[in-house]
Amino acid sequence: MFYRSSNINRSFLRELFVAVFFVSFLSLTFFSCASLRKVDIVVPEDINQQLDIKAAPQDKQKEAKEIKIIQHTIKVPANQKEIKARATKMVSKEKLIKNPFKVGEKIRLDLYYIGIRAASLVMETMPFVEVNGQKAFHFRGIASTTSLMKYIYRVYDVIDTYVDFANFVPLKMTLKMDESKQNVSMVLIYDHKKGKSTFWKKRIDAKKNVEEIKKLDDFTPYAQDIFSTLYFVRTHDLKLGDKLKFVVHDNGKNWNMTIEAVKREKIWTRLGAVETIVLVPTIERDGAVFTKGKLSLWVTADERKIPVKFEAEVKFGTMKGIIKDYIAQ
Image (cartoon, rainbow, N blue to C red; front, side):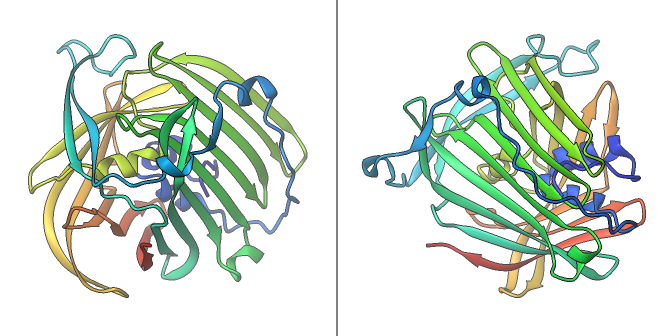
């Protein structure tokens, strides 16, 4: 499930989730069969009206062979332990790369915990949209428990991120969670010109308690969100020993992320033998290092950088994900 708190350490889950969003599945709770019916949570009008999102016209649906990304080198003063909004020096460089994304691309992974297939994850590249008149990518992820596991704990979570086509930065992220113990709706909007984010979240738990948060925060320029991070990594051709450093902004906090390419490995999947690059993320905040050695992600060693496998060490064992199928229209 995407943003769930359980009796596994909450802070560990958040740092791990920021690394690669789908690993938050490891917060699945197997100790209660309590069930909360789905509740449709209405997003406030003042939040919805901040950005106008609609389907892009046909002439903007054409896929470019190359896309522009802005590579950022983070410069943190020696006496500054944390990457702080508006206090971080960044060197930016534009670069044209071969477009790794195809509209209609669908990546499906099976997720296993203690050897049991517990859930599935589907990541899809949706048709282009316009955000305030500007062309944008639309990426979607759907996480759901298997037909058996839903009787123990039901999960159906949907996350969407809208990423500016011109420079590959997130403009808006939404999250809807339909789970046995909670219903959640969340919206995060990025204003990159002002360096401000708008965060709204409403949660209803199994006891019908309601929690609602709305706030405005500073964020580091060119930061990614917790879902666009995975697609941002796919735009970089990482060789062995390379390190990619960037900022992830979530819920008012800025996280310093490093992705390191540690080895090449040939693995066997349902798609056959696949040459991969193994990536290991590390997250730093407040001078503390999280997730180092806790998570590994295997992506194809080609220009698509398709995630085909991951392993995450958790409190009660190992969570594994392996690609089930890949569709590219």
